[in-house]
Length: 472
Image (cartoon, rainbow, N blue to C red; front, side):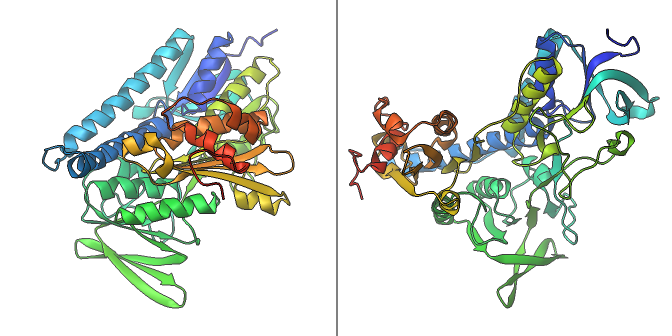
């Protein structure tokens, strides 16, 4: 029997891609749900992350395509000028439409929500500090789901001010195109903004501590993307450590260490994009006996349950990879477990995408990782230069790459650099999850002419029988 003092079956703290999805699934399963969100319905991803960034990336790519059409296809048009105010209005219109969509889905599924900052009082009670100085509200629920997400890492000595030193939240607002942008960090966020601002005319330098862009991703694929970005005029400095930044005149000077040498770069704006960290401050974890691990993440089991049995946690709060689609799946799992269904979070692989042009998408093991695990590896590749469809797009940089356990022929990783890699990687996800073999993919008839044929050809190249390239 439900305790009478419970106001809801579940309180969800955080309305990002984990929390809002969990709330919808809980509503579908007949649970009474309250969502507590202090800032953004849809979270960072929808409001100042994934969605507006991809809108800007699309605009940047259109800008590049127009120039390609003028140069190579005979289009008689002038170089386009961009009205930043209109571009930002278009971008924000997309965001607001999606926010309204979430609120409509909540309403249709009986989900309530309140704007405010939620804090745990005990294992069943949440105190909500509401805006405008109104009195705090207190709610009780049988279960609590924590989905507070993450925020940009702040580096001591590189504090953001929104004027000359930005984080990703400032960059996505697209206030202006600086003459020269310095980007600290060559992860997905840093590279995507480097691409956006370069396409709109900024000089761009990217500095990375590690010896490759996108540390941890397939080295060959990352190297291919780095070459492409350099050809676009983005200067990439690898194996360097930023040591200080100072404001100089109307701009900034960034000092960094390269080997034994101290060097400096001058610019107008520094974008600090060195990662994200979980949001736990003010959540009241101590009140219920919960503690984060040494990296700041909250431990959970495969059902997303914390050590307090009725409290669940999902998304960036619980550890890497810090990706929206991972959080959403975790939200569904937690909702189903709370509703008494047999559900667990146990993916073989989670895809990752970098939305520059060319794009880079990856799932499963890298070639280096497979070898490090003692696996005898076979690799198949197919370049876009040999793809008729890629040629018609005018986008021929990169390749599709399949990593296979030679003994079993099972696909353990798929890595794509090139056009529409973000959409094509879905086939790779399915292959890894299902334990498909390279022969399975190679024998599956793919439509012609399409980009998807590259995966079929790469799979055939594993066995040295691809048709449209020399098999080496």
